[in-house]
Length: 74
Length: 423
Image (cartoon, rainbow over all chains, first blue to last red; front, side):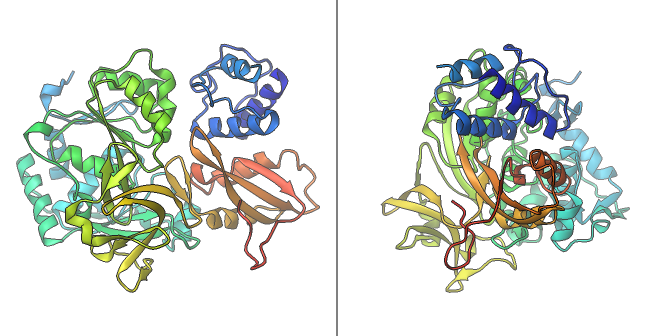
């Protein structure tokens, strides 16, 4: 799961000309640390749903990488 | 340091701009260049030019600050001419805010001023809609009870919803705190620091700030949602975060301004506009031409009725609920996108043979765009083509028009009438 999430996050970062992450820090905040806007979050959530069948925003509001992993590992 | 006692007009925390109504008057009186096309990156400049144009009865065209050169040229405009200005050397002589108010209401009564706003049309390029103050301030409420309001300005200032918030706040001489471009974490802070009492935004905007509330905000008195479909889960969140606020939902569009508001998903048709609104047998909401701005691109049913493309469910004689959109425009975070426009741009990218754009739903922006693309054999790096698409389209299209998911396919599906399948 971590590998998949890292890959999808990096796809977005690279697209926007930002440096990709080498490791996934669970405390990273999606908006303030990774600079994700609503469109980036929408892309991430749809791609994760396609790969895992889980809508990470279904049950709660997600702020951090760690919270996404929690949802994926439910 | 200025305080609110100083009659604040505009606060743009990111640009470090604080302007009082007095300073606005001064800037209006000393303005010596005017433009026919309002295209500025700084929202204060946009509103300064807009107010100046009303006072001098100049028609102006408002261009989205996120338009790219390509989009402007596709609308048939010359890119260089939109930045042209004329020297203005008459003395405007505004001595008080009341002078401005008088001019605005006079321009409304005499219909002597108009602004053009661009919106996604059902043809390939944005359509231009001229609006006068009749429509822009139709729903503005003024008076004693509004005078202490403090507004968070959370819409794109060049769009209809932004203009509506602007006039509601301006005509009551309220301070506006510009948060539309702020980092979402800061928005929550600004609502608190500036003691904002009123906010109007898209559901997508609210969803993006919700993660940053540590405690509920008790200053906000009114929270308005517009531009996207009502969302009851969001309403519950908003009630929790703004426990003292009344919640409203508005139905508005670039074509006719605000027509209905409600405190849930059921809209009531006010007595005053009852004869100007009707619902067809198949449930489409029609609006009479008298409520519209004007545009060469309007197509009217029986010469009189504008088809909104919104399918609604009639609850009783004067109540309805929004169901879905009939035409192909896709609502991405409150912005309407025409998939044909995006497909045209995709096909200009080297290696793209054909493209089909459609939407995927999600809980953040309602929809995002997906593109199925047929690539030429000559493209070797198909893996990273999504990045190429993003980077190419970022130079040409507003961000919400860029497909975020790219599927490379061998061929596109067509219906029997030859139309591309979008769902």
